[in-house]
Amino acid sequence: MNSIPDDIYTEQDADPDTLANLGPLRRLAGTWRGKIGKDVNPKADGPEHRDYYETIDLQPIDPQSNGPQLLYGLRYHAHINTEEEDITFHDQLGYWLWEPDTGLIMQSLTIPRGQTALAVGKAAPGDNVLRLQATRGPTDYGICSTTFLEEAFRTDSYKIEVTFNPDGTWSYALETMLALRGREPFAHVDNNTLTKIAEPKPNALKQIVDSKGR
Image 1 (cartoon, rainbow, N blue to C red):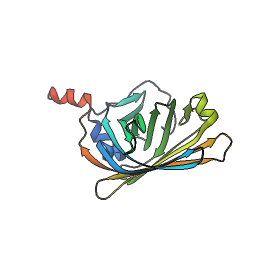
Image 2: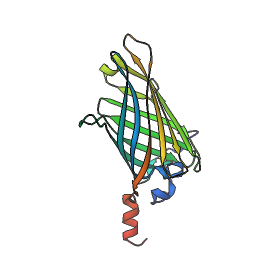
Image 3: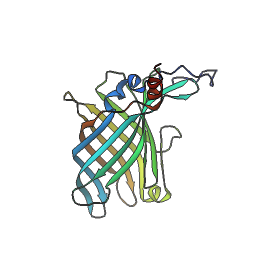
Image 4: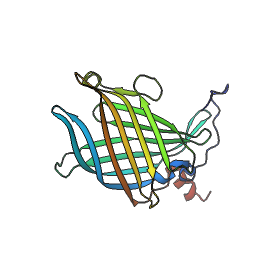
């Protein structure tokens, strides 16, 4: 929201059909697979380059209200592996959120190494490129990590660019700037292109409304 209204309690009337109200996030909904992921991460003897494959599931959630602020969104789970190892290479949970009134888009993310972030951007429903970022320090749209990560592999910024391709796939490019203890800043980068393998399911409220014929 551009400003905080005097009435911070009264909620808007929400449409139960989240898929119809996702704006620029609508094309992300569904289950996706990518097989050509590229990762560059820091190691003691220099940058390591890894290929990876992944599945990302993005499903609509019921509309969410912060008083008058109305959000529609997708809950997601990204699971990433490499051909060389059976153990999970990367696991990530979070939400993509859209505020129709302002064009605000957000991505929350949590990874099971003790780190979470909230990235923010602006977009219009027909945009083919989404750009979001989070920065260490602010209490809104920031990054929070364990003490170990703060002292050894501090994350100073996170950027993601999503591009919707003409063939129905979408691609992402990530850049996470790390402050490594005793070293120069390091740009940890990832990119992949994903193809849809399953359509999304309606959100829970939409299923209930449809079952009652309303």
